[in-house]
Image (spheres, rainbow, N blue to C red):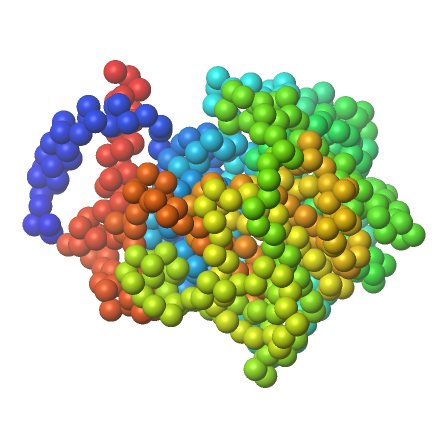
Length: 595
């Protein structure tokens, strides 16, 4: 291959075009391509130089922009000094858990290697984000927005906004992920974060005591009188945040792929891992700029004052800088049900179309019989085998070495156990690789019971679920009488308040292996996760994709993995062959468009 001249390579390219043009022109859905180089850079978001993880030199990383049914191709180059995987929070890869980017589905990408994810965002719209899934790396960055637009022929339930604005919010430490990992390994709590970042930047100096000079802050530029869609993602570690914009109403329009009833909020609690879309009209008089605030919740808020992110909303005709006190957070010290009631007020817009022309409310989930019940209980971290661990139903998930379906396809025994209990058991907690043996086409009820003192966020990869109920105390079967069986919001990440429960319903129509986890990074790192293994017993290649041709091998199958080389002689035949394929497909798509 090294001996090929430029002319020979061009000839090969041309012959491939001629041979495959007619096939690809009838293939249908377009492709979008991204080349992500993940590396360390030095940044000072809170005024202290530190190592952060950048994507293509940017922190946060660039947004991924796709449209319903697009095939998304992301070539990830790992330029870190440790293994890496990228996952896609809330993006549902139909029939293709091989691309999910967590240890139960993918072998990690070693340093100096690249791996190409390829998946279709089938029948999906909405606001999501991507992030690193291994080794607490998200605490150092590597995240970015991932949004999926409606097809042109599908109406959205609001007028076309003047623009899309992407905002990431999250708590932040001036120590990087390796230092935080060391602290957790030593059995320590991470303690209070050093601040909150908005789009990777520290707070505007609204207070000279709390915010030192020289902090770079985010400015969102808008035009007076226009309405914008603002997509907000809590990409943080463990802190729930209240989001608000001074003197502006937040019209909630969508959350994690589903349109909501459009209600006005002056502020909204956004928990770790959650994403929301707001329609915000710039209807103020522009006498000054306005504060954008993300402040810590469910903590001692006076003590945590410095854990507040502040950005600036700047009208193009603004007459001066933002000044004065920040807009007030919720005043609910004596009303512990306020945030729960706010969460339950978010309802699905059943008359709106989503990715398809049919209304979102056409699926009558409240009339479907539940086939299985899982009560999943969390408690404070505890010592197991001499180490601090976090558990679900008394089991702390151990690190997988061989991905689950890869083990299945290669008859690897002992890689995992299908014995995750469907309810809390009165037994000594243990560390294990215990997986849920879920039933394909089942309709299951999951109760997240939080017997802990901190808010937890729970996420299910590969699916959205109906968030039908929340309540304080212990869940019982009588709790079902309060379920919303008509217009509950559908989403993939839900909060579970301390000393409370959250109930969701899930239709298991997407075969594969899907991660069920806390989005609180410290608890996830300490073992608070499991997987749902969902296999169609009549599988014939129609419901689940097979092993991808670029699969990586590890664990019990590590001997099958050939060395990945990047010399000019092998860049086409090995790791970078996907790039040539991507160029071919892009060329075909362009030609097909103009045929």
